[in-house]
Image 1 (cartoon, rainbow, N blue to C red):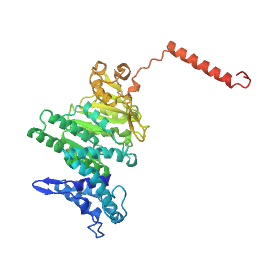
Image 2 (cartoon, rainbow, N blue to C red; image 1 turned 180 degrees about the horizontal axis):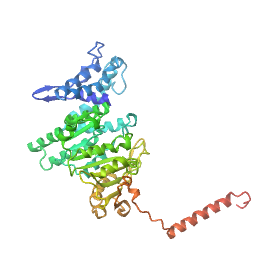
Image 3 (spheres, helix red, strand yellow; image 1 turned 120 degrees about the vertical axis):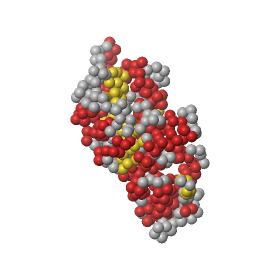
Image 4 (spheres, rainbow, N blue to C red; image 1 turned 30 degrees about the horizontal axis):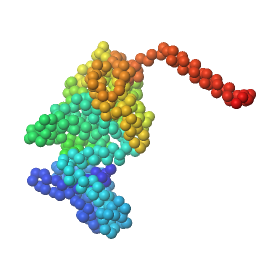
Length: 455
């Protein structure tokens, strides 16, 4: 991940404040054994210069470079060696492993993208797609990453627009911030794309209306790179412990939208992250968290009860059991909150069963089996209008998947299945099936009997 991230940055041209700097190409890497001129060092030095020219603050630059230095640490990767078949057509003779990797990325990714309009946006799309596969479910580094179609849905549920101020206090690879930035830019450019006013607003969105905090150094580097490759929304990506960050960070930012997928291993499944975030937001703002079901059914009672004294639970959306495959056992829900008003227990909460989102997930693939694109569009209408939702594109039984019900102040009854009333009265079809099953079993026993001699 760090190789691809660093090398992509090293390839970028930059024209800033009247100073033009060209990215490096494979020709810059010659397999020199001299310290300071090794191939990996050339890549890292270019990344350092690029970040400086981008005016990334010194502390962030050093944090990112401490991760990117992995590219130059192993001297053996800078020694000329036999070519891999994937790059043999691009290089003559021997080349270092670092040059071979750089050449592969340059020829197959950078050159293709560089010839397109909107280079950085396409580069950002590619990078996000790469992270999705490279990180998988994030299990190896203890981070579970939210699929992009879910981050998009959650930004739309919160009605993120060009004037929103969005924060994520467990940023990961910046998936929620990227999804929010796209929604905000689309809104800002609606009907006026390319105009001076639109361009000014887009710049403001990227520089001032997104805030991310991430503790893991590697994920911080990937998130900052992700935002840089999107045209630089990296200004407000902070490295640090969410709960120890200076209070003025949040006071100055004035967030009105919060999106979160906290570390599930944190106390109370990670629920304190959203409690902390909601307390730092403007009154009337909206927050959404995707988290283990158990956080809403007893594992986070202390935090949940406190939250209800200050904020309103608006909706609970049950997500597919296999959403985080291959971690298939992680059962999750999305909880949506309104900031700054204590929960009114006489007002019902919206409960939605979205276990059938149209996808089937395996360890190797994501399969479309039941119109997932339509379902993710429909869920927004169902969230807004409930059973009165119209012009739905997929096949739904709204009586089965939507209900409104009150919660108690226990903080332990926030999940769909706790409110869905199941009719246990047997029907004639139930009786007929039970009798049929019994008769089939009885016949099977007769056929297996030792004293049965007929054909």
